[in-house]
Length: 298
Image (cartoon, one colour):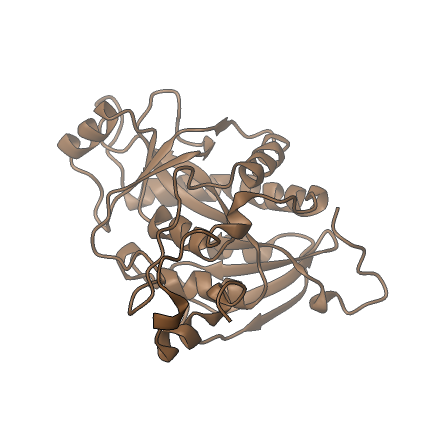
């Protein structure tokens, strides 16, 4: 369990975890001492201010991926600024709340999936913090932190929601939904669910040495399921609203029962990833990435 903050300013406590998602989570019952901060990063401004609150005695950080009022398309999200901002405020673990379509009969609308694999089918988004004179090859064989995912799965189970542990999430560019041909190809590849935001978010979190997991809410059967109505914005919003209570309760459960961080490979993912000779690194890039590489390159 995290340390007791009684007798101290709770907002100076260490962040237990960060949530990237929609605004529904800001109104969670029991959320206290709410504050927010506007941040700038070397990669531009994040999608929204970072909102802080105390929940079950733990400090939680929130960031609205698509901006306040959902103004930013999946391909326009500044994923680098979002992850960098959460790193700046001291978050070490992230739970992503997202909508997804199902590519499997047994993953039905209303269910929640904690995926263990990721297929990046995007092509327009900056995928890395690195470049401009600094080369780092991050390991991503297992893109979601298994320890963190297990904790999230346990706490979603406690809500009574139908939850699945494992499955491959494919990230498409969007903002349009799939064609039937695309959806059926993805199914033939053995993929489980489809979304628009996990890539490059998960990979950037790994580069930032942060534990990352997704709580994916199934809103539809994409367009492959011929006996069901094709996916629509109305359908997505309706199911998300139905699942809001599950998401809120799961986050509250997680805050209440969160385990101390045990050592995992996410926290040292850059240790063997940087291939550039430090003596060849230009000063501008070194300064820009100091938050990420400082413990390896002084």
